[in-house]
Amino acid sequence: MTKKNIGGLSDYIVLKEEKEVIFYLHNPYPDCLAIPEIMKARFPDDYKSIVTSDLDEFKKYRGQV
Image (cartoon, rainbow, N blue to C red; front, side):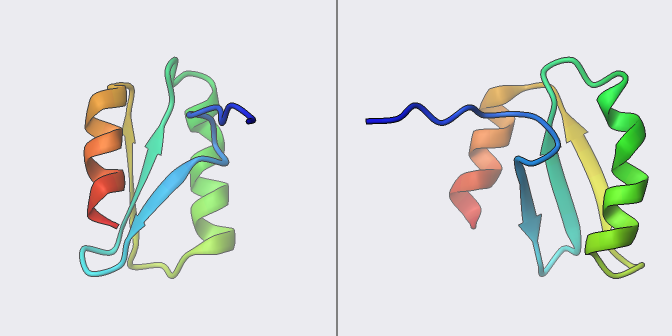
C-alpha cells in the first residue's frame, strides 16, 4: 500500500459548478506564487483559485466531488 501525500500544487480540487479550484498548501508562501500561471494554463479565464492551509477544510471539498 502506498501512502498518498496531500498538498502541493499538484493536489487540487475543481468545483465545476462554482468555477473554483481549491489548492491545499500547508505553507502557502512561496508556492502560491505559481498558482496564477497554473490557472492560466489549465483552466478557463472565469475560474478562480482558492488556497487553503486547513487540511480538514480541503478534505471537506474533496467529499463534494
